[in-house]
Amino acid sequence: MFINVAQFNFIKQQAKKITQAKNTTNDGAVLKAVQEVVIADLAQKITMTEEELTLLLPIIDLKNQQEAEQFVNTLASYVKPFPVLTKATIKTLFKKEKKLAYPPLEQVDWQSCSFIAWDDVSTNRRYIVYEHGDLRGLRGVISKNHVKGVCSVCHQHGTVTQFTLAKKGNQVDQFTSRTNYICVDSDTCNEQISDLEHMLQFFAYIAQT
Ligand SMILES: [Zn+2]
Image 1 (tube, protein in one colour):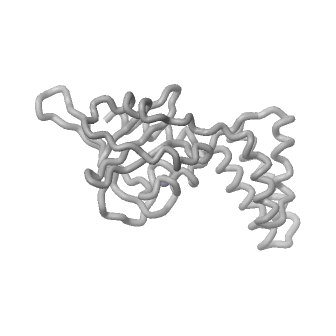
Image 2 (cartoon, protein in one colour; image 1 turned 45 degrees about the vertical axis):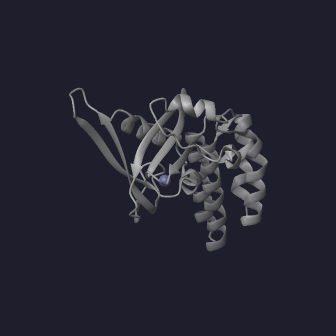
C-alpha cells in the first residue's frame, strides 16, 4: 500500500476524531456511529484491498492521543513523499524567471509535503511546485495583509493572504489575473491538506489564468 501525504493527513484527522469521541462520550451507540463513519470515509478516500484495510482497522480502537500517535507512526513508512527537488529542477520549472529565489532545500521535509512553496520576501513573490503527472511550477504575488479566512488549497479556516497570479494575454499590454486566498504559512497548509484532488483542481484552475 502506498498513500500520499494528503491521505496520511486524512488518516491522522480520523484518528483524532475517534479519540475525541472516546473522550467526550460513553454512549456505545454514538461511538459505534463515529467508528462506522470513519471506516466508510477511509474506504472512500483511499483505494485499498481488504488486506490493506486491515492495516487501518486498529484506528477504531484508539483510546487517547498517545495511541493515536503510535498508530499513525506505524503507517509513516507507506507514505509516498514529494519528489526531492534540486536547484536544477526548480530552474527548469521557472525558466522565464530572471531573479529566481530558491527554497532552503536541505530544510524541506519531503515526507510531509503535498506541494512545495517558498517566498521571495524582497518581491513578495511566492513560488509553488506541485506534481500533477509531472512537476509544475506556479509563481504569484502574495499580499502583506493577513486575514482570517478559508484557504483555497487546503480548504481549512486559518490565517490567509491574497495570492495573485497574472498572465500575459494574447494582445500587447493585456493581462489576466486571478486572486485567491491561501494560507500564509505553507507548512501549516501542507499539514491541513487531506484531499489531493481538491488541491490539484485549484492549482490547475489558477494555472490556466
Ligand atoms: Zn491552506
